[in-house]
Length: 147
Image (cartoon, rainbow, N blue to C red):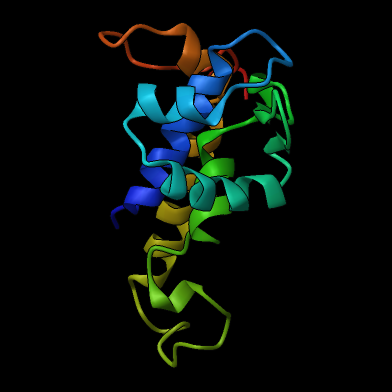
Protein backbone atom coordinates (compact mmCIF):
# COMPACT_ATOMS: atom_id res chain seq x y z
CA UNK A 1 0.00 0.00 0.00
CA UNK A 2 1.21 3.45 -0.85
CA UNK A 3 -0.72 6.59 -0.03
CA UNK A 4 -1.58 8.87 -2.90
CA UNK A 5 0.09 12.19 -3.55
CA UNK A 6 -3.21 13.85 -2.58
CA UNK A 7 -3.09 12.17 0.83
CA UNK A 8 0.55 13.14 1.33
CA UNK A 9 -0.27 16.76 0.54
CA UNK A 10 -3.37 16.68 2.74
CA UNK A 11 -1.23 15.47 5.65
CA UNK A 12 1.30 18.24 4.99
CA UNK A 13 -1.44 20.88 4.78
CA UNK A 14 -3.00 19.76 8.08
CA UNK A 15 0.44 19.69 9.68
CA UNK A 16 1.10 23.24 8.48
CA UNK A 17 -2.23 24.43 9.87
CA UNK A 18 -1.49 22.61 13.14
CA UNK A 19 1.60 24.75 13.58
CA UNK A 20 -0.43 27.97 13.39
CA UNK A 21 -2.11 29.61 16.41
CA UNK A 22 -5.40 27.93 17.37
CA UNK A 23 -8.37 29.20 15.38
CA UNK A 24 -6.24 31.18 12.95
CA UNK A 25 -7.40 31.30 9.35
CA UNK A 26 -4.57 30.34 7.03
CA UNK A 27 -4.47 31.78 3.54
CA UNK A 28 -4.46 29.34 0.65
CA UNK A 29 -1.42 31.04 -0.88
CA UNK A 30 0.57 30.51 2.34
CA UNK A 31 -0.19 26.78 2.48
CA UNK A 32 0.61 26.46 -1.23
CA UNK A 33 3.90 28.31 -0.89
CA UNK A 34 5.08 26.52 2.25
CA UNK A 35 4.03 23.04 1.13
CA UNK A 36 4.71 23.44 -2.60
CA UNK A 37 1.16 22.59 -3.61
CA UNK A 38 -0.67 24.23 -6.52
CA UNK A 39 -3.77 26.23 -5.53
CA UNK A 40 -6.12 24.06 -7.61
CA UNK A 41 -4.73 20.85 -6.11
CA UNK A 42 -4.92 22.26 -2.57
CA UNK A 43 -8.59 23.10 -3.06
CA UNK A 44 -9.23 19.60 -4.35
CA UNK A 45 -7.43 17.80 -1.50
CA UNK A 46 -9.01 19.92 1.22
CA UNK A 47 -12.57 19.14 0.10
CA UNK A 48 -12.67 15.66 1.73
CA UNK A 49 -11.15 17.14 4.90
CA UNK A 50 -13.84 19.82 4.98
CA UNK A 51 -16.54 17.20 4.38
CA UNK A 52 -15.19 15.11 7.27
CA UNK A 53 -15.05 18.05 9.69
CA UNK A 54 -11.26 18.17 9.94
CA UNK A 55 -10.76 21.47 8.12
CA UNK A 56 -13.06 24.44 7.74
CA UNK A 57 -13.09 27.16 5.12
CA UNK A 58 -14.02 30.80 5.10
CA UNK A 59 -14.79 32.58 1.86
CA UNK A 60 -14.30 36.16 0.88
CA UNK A 61 -11.78 38.80 1.83
CA UNK A 62 -9.61 37.44 4.61
CA UNK A 63 -10.86 33.95 3.86
CA UNK A 64 -8.86 30.78 3.89
CA UNK A 65 -8.73 27.51 5.77
CA UNK A 66 -8.57 26.55 9.42
CA UNK A 67 -8.61 23.41 11.51
CA UNK A 68 -12.16 22.58 12.52
CA UNK A 69 -10.84 20.47 15.41
CA UNK A 70 -7.94 20.78 17.79
CA UNK A 71 -4.72 19.21 16.46
CA UNK A 72 -4.89 16.85 19.46
CA UNK A 73 -8.14 15.47 18.04
CA UNK A 74 -6.88 14.90 14.48
CA UNK A 75 -4.84 11.78 13.75
CA UNK A 76 -3.00 10.49 10.72
CA UNK A 77 -5.73 7.86 10.44
CA UNK A 78 -8.40 10.58 10.25
CA UNK A 79 -6.69 12.34 7.34
CA UNK A 80 -5.89 9.10 5.50
CA UNK A 81 -9.47 7.86 5.84
CA UNK A 82 -10.86 11.23 4.71
CA UNK A 83 -8.68 11.14 1.58
CA UNK A 84 -8.47 7.46 0.76
CA UNK A 85 -11.58 6.00 2.35
CA UNK A 86 -11.42 2.91 4.58
CA UNK A 87 -8.05 1.20 4.91
CA UNK A 88 -8.35 -2.51 4.10
CA UNK A 89 -4.88 -3.71 3.00
CA UNK A 90 -6.39 -6.73 1.24
CA UNK A 91 -9.50 -7.48 -0.82
CA UNK A 92 -10.64 -10.17 1.60
CA UNK A 93 -11.14 -7.57 4.34
CA UNK A 94 -13.45 -5.25 2.42
CA UNK A 95 -16.64 -7.09 3.22
CA UNK A 96 -17.28 -10.26 5.16
CA UNK A 97 -18.09 -13.09 2.79
CA UNK A 98 -16.40 -11.63 -0.29
CA UNK A 99 -13.60 -14.16 -0.09
CA UNK A 100 -14.59 -17.81 -0.38
CA UNK A 101 -11.43 -18.76 1.54
CA UNK A 102 -12.20 -16.45 4.49
CA UNK A 103 -12.70 -19.29 6.99
CA UNK A 104 -10.04 -21.65 5.66
CA UNK A 105 -7.21 -19.35 4.63
CA UNK A 106 -4.34 -19.15 7.12
CA UNK A 107 -3.60 -15.59 5.96
CA UNK A 108 -7.02 -14.12 6.66
CA UNK A 109 -6.50 -13.88 10.42
CA UNK A 110 -3.07 -12.37 9.87
CA UNK A 111 -4.49 -9.70 7.52
CA UNK A 112 -7.18 -8.83 10.07
CA UNK A 113 -4.62 -8.43 12.85
CA UNK A 114 -2.17 -6.47 10.69
CA UNK A 115 -4.95 -4.09 9.60
CA UNK A 116 -6.11 -3.54 13.19
CA UNK A 117 -2.58 -2.86 14.44
CA UNK A 118 -1.83 -0.58 11.49
CA UNK A 119 -4.96 1.49 12.11
CA UNK A 120 -4.23 1.62 15.84
CA UNK A 121 -0.72 2.87 15.13
CA UNK A 122 -1.95 5.56 12.72
CA UNK A 123 -4.49 6.72 15.31
CA UNK A 124 -1.72 7.23 17.87
CA UNK A 125 -0.15 10.04 15.86
CA UNK A 126 -2.10 13.22 16.42
CA UNK A 127 -1.20 16.46 14.70
CA UNK A 128 -0.39 18.29 17.93
CA UNK A 129 2.37 15.75 18.57
CA UNK A 130 3.53 15.78 14.97
CA UNK A 131 3.61 19.59 14.85
CA UNK A 132 5.62 19.79 18.07
CA UNK A 133 8.41 17.53 16.85
CA UNK A 134 11.49 18.44 14.86
CA UNK A 135 12.49 16.68 11.65
CA UNK A 136 15.13 14.60 13.39
CA UNK A 137 12.78 13.17 16.00
CA UNK A 138 10.28 10.35 15.77
CA UNK A 139 6.94 12.20 15.66
CA UNK A 140 5.07 10.57 18.51
CA UNK A 141 1.84 12.20 19.60
CA UNK A 142 1.27 13.48 23.06
CA UNK A 143 -0.97 10.50 23.76
CA UNK A 144 0.71 7.80 21.68
CA UNK A 145 1.52 5.55 24.57
CA UNK A 146 -1.43 6.48 26.72
CA UNK A 147 -3.91 4.65 24.48
